[in-house]
Amino acid sequence: MTKDSRTKNSIRNIKYSTINKVVTMFLSLVGRNIFLQILPIDYLGINGVFTDIFVMMSLADLGLATAMAFSFYKPLAEGDEDKITALVTLYRRLYNTIALVITIAGLALVPFLDYVINTDLNIPHLRLYYLIALFNTVVSYLFAYKQSLISADQKMHIIQKFSMWMAIFKIILQTLVLYLTHSYTAYLCVGIVNAIAYNLLVNHQANKYYPYILKRKQIDDEEKKKIYSNVASVFLYKISSVLMDGTDNMLISVIVNTAIVGIYTNYLTVINRITQLVGSVFWSITASVGNLITEGNTKEIRKTFNQMMILGDWLGTYSVICIFCLIQEFIGLFFGWQYVFDDIVLVAILLNVYNSIVTYPVIMFREATGLYKKVRWIMFICAVENLVLSIILGKMFGTFGIILASFISRITTIFWYEANLLYKEVLGKKQYEYYLKILTNAATMLIFGAITYFATSKLNVTNLLVWLVKGCICTIIINVLYLIKYFRNDDFKVIMRKIAKVLGVRNAKA
Image (cartoon, rainbow, N blue to C red; front, side, top):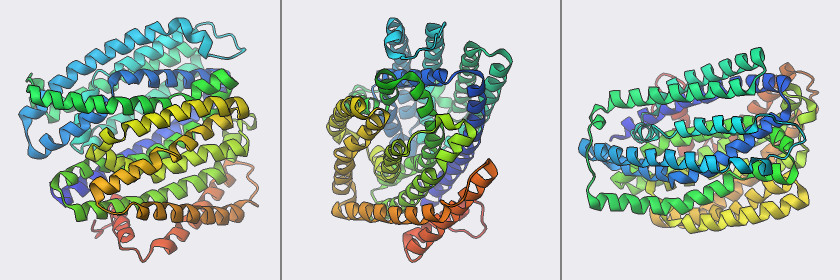
């Protein structure tokens, strides 16, 4: 695939993904505000705990989604329809098995829900709520293999449009149903209808663009062995990811209180949408990077990675500073000041946000190159460290300790290990360059953050309009500072041209 084709597909994916995330974030916040006016905060906490439970259950996919996307890159680049059809046949069978396993495991957890939900509020239909949420999760696995095929072919923009409209439909209908019935059961049932409809649309689009996958072909034993080997490699990685990302809400619920989970998820509703929006920029490019790597052009690979590092620094700094300066007042104005965390808890959250965003380039290249096979043990060590630290620090410092444990465990393990591996195996360069860039960028972020904070701290935010003005001031200050920092950098100029192309500016050459 040519460079222009990769750029064109990446731009389309980023454009649709960005619109999707922004629209759904706005509607989610409105829906959440109405939710809190009708139901107690504990119900939001239950939602958060259920989410962690189902993240734990996602272990059943053995990391198949990651291995699957990687296995599609080469046959798609070569136009090998028989190979693609054989892979789809195999993955269809595996995912049907996974859906069954999750159903059985989910049902087995029903008797233990009272030990996980820690609240003084009487929840009369807790098990029913859980079963509805379980069914919603199972449905999402039925056509997952087809979505992975579309994504690997750099055509996520095809289904992003449907994803956005289905999300809009879901949020509006859920809010309307909740407002009219005050029924949490009806609220959850709308989610099921939406999940089924979305998966049917994905199925239709995949069949439309890849009609040959409707056939059945058997993959050869050697290829199957290779795939199973990849899946086995990813499995430990998957366990580690779940233990790191899927336990905070449950630990907060058990150690602190389920209602605190509800408050925490208010923050995550905003913050996760921001990190997902930033992440979508990188994930929209991952398939293009995978295609580039198959061509073996080391010079172009290094250049692309350097561009991604600059983008990660820029977006990470912008996100963290804006969240720090704006989110406390936003939560207070939008949800109620009783739902505002202490600043120290926010700092712990932002440490994780910054680490996640600035390491996106490394993660993206890891996924595109299949290096997950070589980082599974360090990931497992990180996960165990996170779990132990979360329990210890959670008992000592509550919510702050549980969230801080995630940052400590990552920074002491996978942060440095993955970078070392990438520089050695793919980039062929000395890894000290990476750490120097990260330290320099972190110092710049603190300086820019201090400037922005002091420039806006005297602004008395009493309503959302003033808050928007403050947000605009933050945006202008941060981006002007970054233009000053990078304006002489050639890779930054390439990024700016690509951004201009995304925005539809004429004569912008990527």
